[in-house]
Image 1: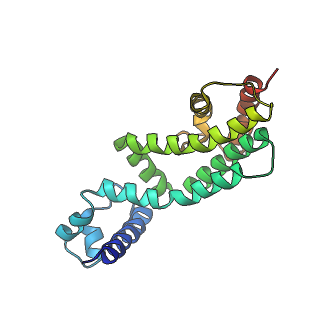
Image 2: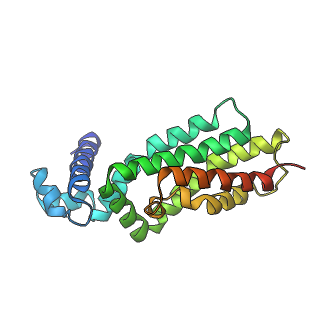
Image 3: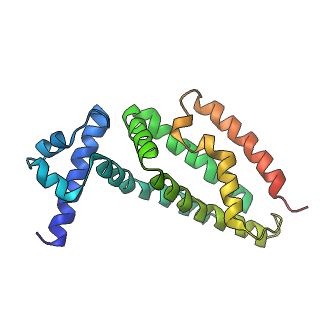
Length: 197
């Protein structure tokens, strides 16, 4: 089996697993069921993915590109750094809330990955900091934000302050309108700390 065939098989596995995850949920999906859907042996499935969690992580990773494209497009908008910073957080809140609201099974999948693969979550946070840091750097260079010697740490602290609006595990008890209102208030406080005096 050449590389193209292997990649095609991996994509078929992810598609089949995705259908099961979305219909039955992560916990109720088994490797043998995924293999049966593909008319392959469970042993063959394990040649491509060592565990169900590895499939879930690869499935989630395949869907990150939409989010990355969204963050990149916001970062490139012809707006001030302050406007892009709030737009970044608004867009991520709406994207995450809508995705989870449309499927509790995806919420379950996100919980499982977050619980069992903290390295996955840490990598995603690091990726987001790239976009945040770029916006913050622009704001400092434009004289809008106060100088800061450690922009990556600043981006990390903003992530800490806005975590409630970024992770679906924290959305269960709140409406989208409530979360949007709280995000606006949180961003007002963040801007008070960022603005150059």
